[in-house]
Length: 377
Image (tube, rainbow, N blue to C red; front, side):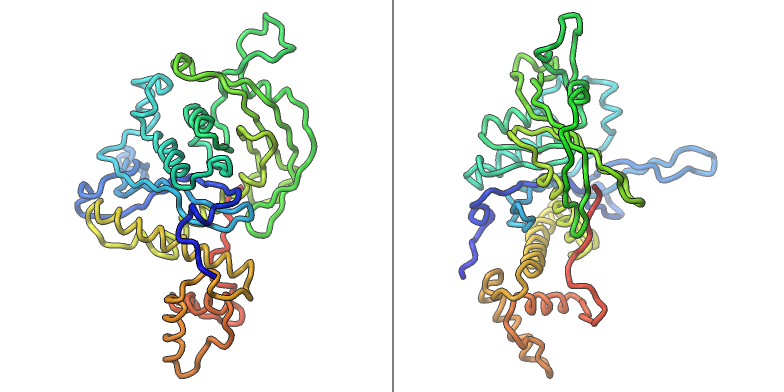
């Protein structure tokens, strides 16, 4: 079976586009050649003064396409950048009101850029749902999604202005989204798969709320009727915080399962950092690091895709995922061994061969190759 050449071809059915930002941190004698990511508090000096450090590194904002079943299809957009200095969002807020600054001048514009680039690549915006965390709770992103004819599901952090509900009295004054959502009764319970083998029971409520743009941008953007969802876990297990999601979407129905798949983006970046050891390279400039990370991103997706495909269909033919050249190389490596390991040509067998090239021991008590990390709720 021929393998489709790009994410756009693979995403022919409805798919999720998972947007996420991650940092690659490096230690260099000349950090200015790379740039900086953020500042941290590294403890205190003996005299009691805070020890503030600026980390050297590269940031990556990626869009990973996955199926509704969680199989990674490929990257639809990626952006790399560094900072010449980092003052922090809180510092900037003391000097300027961020709601009055054009989105095009902000670093957060990357969310809109990736959305636009992903839709240009996929070509079927109506079949895509863009899923992201609280950092993407941007009103301009909602408007762009509507303009492009695509859908989004975003975790909410901003208690936006809302139009007055139909039964509100005039003296009620201004209204906020969280107040209207809080006044909505619970609609029932729902079971959500989180991670690989865990299911959570959550109370669910949802409400369609007329959402207003920020006051400083009401001349540029129009109000939108958006659906807000609140999911609160019932009897959470000990050892992890309970699920407490407030989500906003322009879908007509609840999509908790879609947001539960956002942890796939966390697994992807862990493959880059742990599996491919992206932070152990010794490259000294931002330009070289960006090229290296772009290559590692594609390798990491292929590893992720192969692992998930082999788990779903271990007895499938290797040609369903691997190219003929890749299969020929693995066959040649195996033939050179004194005791060949490829006894049956299945996808799972070839996954084991690739894993053992990377150090997997394949002992009887070892877990299957690949990453089983499930992320946080």
